[in-house]
Image (cartoon, rainbow, N blue to C red; front, side, top):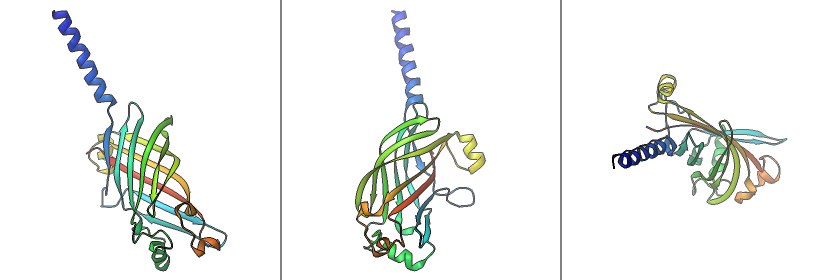
Length: 204
């Protein structure tokens, strides 16, 4: 009877320890670090023969679920699209209008993962749904996810808890989201926009 009890207790303990190591952990995107600056950046690049520009914002929120042992996870990234600054006031206004991104009606850009697959080391194939201008399209991208423990995070970034650093870069077509503005048609704005995203998230 004692042997049975001991064996049962051993199995239960092993499963509990395994669950701790294998469980997904929720990491929330950190709004600011150190001197109050944001560690998160989204850039949008348009490049044509006639005109090029870069838009940027730091207003990014969301949650990343990450299992460092199994190297899998999921996530929801939310960007305040209306805050993207292209360095030109008139262009910013046009971008918010119904002819363009329609940020006046749909201020958020959202990306929700549907599958995450580890490929090599810290690199992942990520599939998900991108919602822009009230329309949702499936995309596939590659992402780099690096995990750092609480000691490193506190020492280098003054962030509490363990952290994950995520970065990705992909291209979308404006026409896929119903954008056919005159500037696109005359090649002043590229139909292909390159989007780069970098965020830090903490489990505290």
